[in-house]
Length: 275
Image: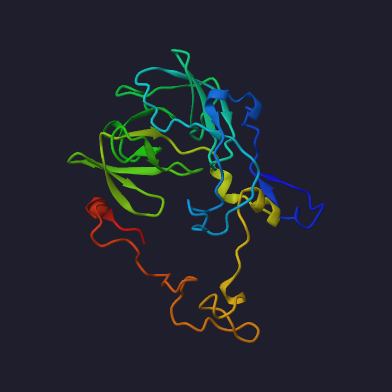
């Protein structure tokens, strides 16, 4: 982590991730791996806000990240570790033996000049990708598929990983960061190791402007609103909540209220619920 001298009030507690390992400036990213994504500021096709507190933010080009890594048994050399403005994790620029370049999620400990490979005979080294059934119990994995060939969907954010607890009856038992234990088909692919940039959770913004750069707009407290605008609104000065159970702006109960559908098809795949 990088800590600043308190030259201003906002600098006093500000911390950022050290980008010493990030070697690729935006100008050097291959054009074929960049694209512009139109921002919608949380609005749907009718122009109505469906996700609040989004808007603004710095301009950024989207990096095409290969979550499938479907070049089987073709080794790839890590050219660089790069910053990605659209995700918390770092990404790695890989050039394969056939000359093609792709971005993949960088694993913690991955170094420039190293080699990664995807396949049934891939060695158990950080960054390599293989089927869950081949990976030893107790290992940590990331970018895990939910169905074979679909591409990684689990454990893709900075510092995240899943632990393999068991392999039985065609399924691998994975322990999620939340504590939930879930069954996934053991023919699905997973990358070995933890996602890079584990220090991301330790970042202190220091000022509101850094959130605005990240496309995050201010959040108004419910207790600061009028009664017609929020269940917590109204009153003289600071008052109590005024409602027995915590609620959202629209009156939906939160905090201890389960929102998962009782008859969801994937309930059978959950071995242990999160706490």
